[in-house]
Length: 209
Image 1 (cartoon, rainbow, N blue to C red):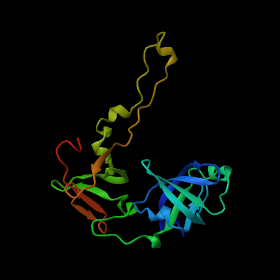
Image 2 (image 1 turned 30 degrees about the horizontal axis):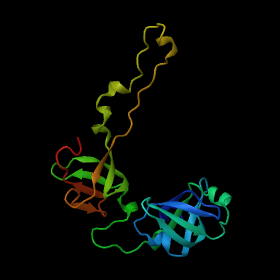
Image 3 (image 1 turned 60 degrees about the vertical axis):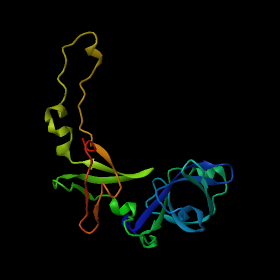
Image 4 (image 1 turned 90 degrees about the vertical axis):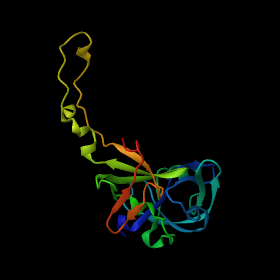
């Protein structure tokens, strides 16, 4: 399988205790991914491909949004610490069935975002953040960003030498991609068209300014 055939369901953030348990930050809205025993796939940091591993049991840490899971063959804290930043994955074919108006995060990434009223292409979805209401993180197109002022990307002029400026070096100003957060609710995001690869939004005043 290539990377497009996997779904990342979470990543290991730390060891838990002394017996090989690990803490997992979820990237899935399906708790059974971390609570029900069965085969998962793990891809340690730097590894080229995921490998199967058995999840033996799991539990939620109340109030922290983290799961503690026990993985077969991981029996010591040292083994658990070696898995820090490892990804937990499942095959795309293992995706649960969704209800109407529910979407897998991976399907939303890369969708272009348009303002419904004007047809303006605002940008592209780069992440879905869960914080009370889900938030779409949208990377704005360059024409909406600081590139409107191209002179800002030039190398700063060299200052006239003085006691202070002698220890400073000219810095190149860079245009970092700007992102905004859009509440992923029906009233603001009425259209999600996966086939056309687009989302249409009706932003309230001030949301994208």
